[in-house]
Image 1 (tube, one colour):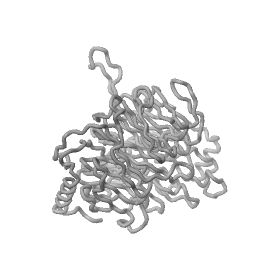
Image 2 (cartoon, rainbow, N blue to C red; image 1 turned 180 degrees about the vertical axis):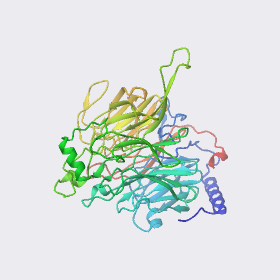
Image 3 (cartoon, rainbow, N blue to C red; image 1 turned 45 degrees about the vertical axis):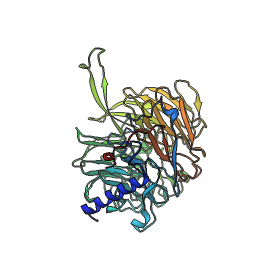
Image 4 (cartoon, helix red, strand yellow; image 1 turned 135 degrees about the vertical axis):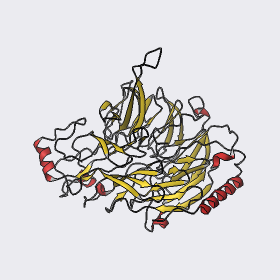
Length: 537
């Protein structure tokens, strides 16, 4: 592995960036950008910017400030720091843009760096002067100097199986980087060799400090990918919380056990046919210091699935019972909630730490941070192979918001209206109880793939129609307050600064779903405030 760049190189990068910023003229005027450091916007994975000046009362003033043309689709939530906004494209490039003007600060081609065709679909992760991205094959993490784009280090592959990839935008903390490994092996007939894992890398040089497998080695179990982005960290308990995917293949003895039981499993109960150490479709708490699994809660039952077996059962690798493919396609969020408070004082409040995540089944689960016990669960909408809930819920601390993709076009009953749609939509739940507050259909009956993002009184969400509408919903009622047609399907979420939101469009990875896009957008409210040079660094 390569080592840190010299201090002089970093100073050169900072000077180079300052000169470029002054040439663009925004050392004298700028929109103050807050930090959105990863897919989840921070180490709690809330996907919220509650200090933003974009709100229910100001969203009518939200207008297009600039548009940048990329080479292909953009499906990752961008990250923001200082005057920079960062994102990868499906064209294989990693971009750093001036957040105020859309001018290119730097661009790096990931294929040239790795020496083989590749790209990233992960939100770049910001830690001090570093910018970290995972590759969609091989399963490598790259660290760049975010000021000028120079490569700082490249990790070794985190998994040696042929189809291993990194889909997760990881979480940085105390000089380390926490990231999961997933795989495209479930899409090929020759499956299976891959076992999902979660790993801790040292940010000084990319060295792996520990690796925690989601399946027992040499056991005949394969799959359990870890791909939901921005797993949250409880800094007091020193725990990180993740979600996992389905198995691709299991031993024949397990299949026979399931046949004998007529696949009689429940989502909220462990599958008795599985052996210890099998963490499929599970939420887990892991010690950040040593990688030890503190608790694991399986939340589906038997789930063995690959795409070739979905299309045809003739493949000899196919299980006798095909599962529903109900991954956790998002990492949990971390919330501290108050319960049983008296009206006069908070002294009697009972506090409970919750980890909350949506599943492709359409069920949203809230577990106790300490024990993994289920506190509440809510069927927010119909499940499906793509979801259900996937890619990222959000919260303002009072409500939890999730998309429902409804990829299988099932009846989706909206609340409280009881109207039914066959398309996707968005759901708000009380964070304490899981009770549905409202659900809103995608107005065109389309799928709702992208993760949601929260500003004061608002939730932003995107549509998969060919027009790619971006919506701002009233956080209390779900009514649509604002929309903009971006011109192509929105699959990724938008990040939020003090006065702007940023995101791209386009998604053609799934045949028949989405539309090719080439644009990245900045929408801002119409006032500017003085720029302070110190915030550049």
